[in-house]
Amino acid sequence: MMKTQASRLHEVDGQVFDVVVIGGGIIGASTAREAAREGYSVLLAEKSDFATGASSRSSRLLHCGLRYFETPKPFRTFAAHPARLFTAVRMARQAMRCRHEFVKTAPQRVTPIEMMFPIYRNSHYLPWQVDLGFRVLQNLAPRDVPLNYRRLTRDEALAHPMGARLSNKETLHSAAIFTEYQFVWPERICVDAVLDAEEMGAVALNHTEAVLADAEGEIRSVALRHKDGGSATVGARRVLVMAGAWIDRVLKQAHPDMPRKILGTKGAHIVVKLPDDLRGKGVATVNGMEEPFYCIPQGDLHYIGPTETVYEGDPDMIRCDGDDIRFILSEAAKLFPGFGLDHADIIRTWAGVRPLTYDESQPKGARSRELHDLSGDGLPGVFAMTAGPIMTHRDAGREVAARLRKDIAPSRPAHDPLYRVRLPVPDPATPRVIEAESGYHLEDVRRAVTGEHAASLADVLYRRAGLGWRHFLTREELEPVAAILAEELGWGAERREAEITGFIDENARLFGVPGI
Image (tube, rainbow, N blue to C red):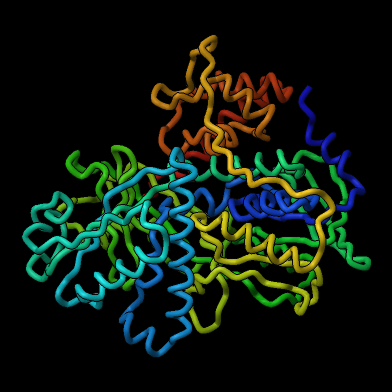
């Protein structure tokens, strides 16, 4: 019989864990997995569902690290700030090594795509600099996951389907072509990490807010509150705040004078249908503000963006707005006039908040991943990680586990590494699917509820099945899914209808196309 969240909270009430992880995005999930692997007793708490924040709102690129070198006047900038060059190389090395590991061990979760980087005569990036940059990137990781880098001449670039639609053809010098990888299903990567952690003994709770409380000796209390009622208090030898854009809010609940750790920037995208000859092909370039800007293929669609504006609002309410759309369409018109896009071409949108490291010297935050020991800030035994991108999530978890080993010994035996790709397994006896091309069956819905912590339509269809991102589900498709949730979770007719209506409303809020 499936345990209720109330019964699971009752079981942990009063327990002392080696580690409590607050935040169930990909960094928190990976941290929980690596800590459990080391033999630490772990509790992971997420106030919403796993992977509802930045983990599901990125540009979905397992990118090679090129963007870390994309800065206005790069040679001048890096000469004036050598520490930034060191950070760029360090982050690029992390990106390339993590790219290699993930493609080799989880090929089911990535898709290779061809990307073009146009080089103009009047740009800050000279052809030899681009060649050098890619040569450096290729040498930062084993070569059996190749970049397939080559540089097209001007004529070759203009003959390429994407190059033919670029702007400023008269100043185009050449174009770099390389292989990038795209996360097919980042939410599922996060859920799989949570399940890995549980398989190694961790306790995972979603829809459960964790609030830091006082410490007695080396044990800090953490209060747990479930969204539907029910509460517990646990102790932690160490607390790891991996709450992304919510980090400062979590820390200030316990210590109002905590110095700022996060600067959030908003990344918005639009989704469009481009001509069929562009399928599988994209562009990596820079916008008018010299910030990275992409046109990325996804199936038979493309998404364009992102924006990069400082965001001080509620991360739970993030969405693409009219200003974002105007900016993206304006940049697309300047960079890709051959697309001929206008507002009517936008199929959907999305936006997220990047949890970057706060740095007074960088108005839009620092992209360097940082593990903060908060002992000096008044919270001994508490750590927080900022600017951890999804592509380096395994490496981030290992960094945290290595830091834990310096502080405390694990209370349990260690495990072998576990990075399991859990794909839905169709049941021939129940061939009905939710959506014709998904392969995700109604019995997978039951499994999501009974074994993967799903507690709502959004939990199933966004994070467990990944359908909400690529298919506008109809009420007729939602009803049999809601019926299974109602059966497993004891919903009445009113709650079942509220879930369907709520899902439709949330889909419109997250992915709708606002007017401009």
